[in-house]
View 1: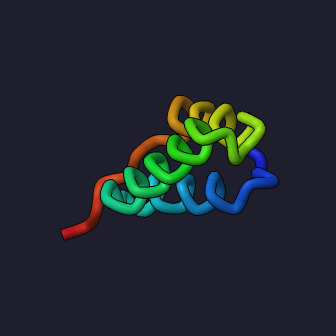
View 2: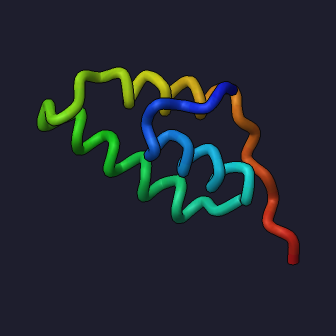
Length: 62
């Protein structure tokens, strides 16, 4: 996935690639809250959704 214009989406992708489920969930909640309160135009949520579908979630190394 190409770099997003939204820092939150870039951070979400990095968290997924690092296997950081807590951080990825936190970012998704924050984006959802912004969308629900209409403090974003919706493009952020769309890009986050697309990242969810296209960026594999890595396993954390033990």
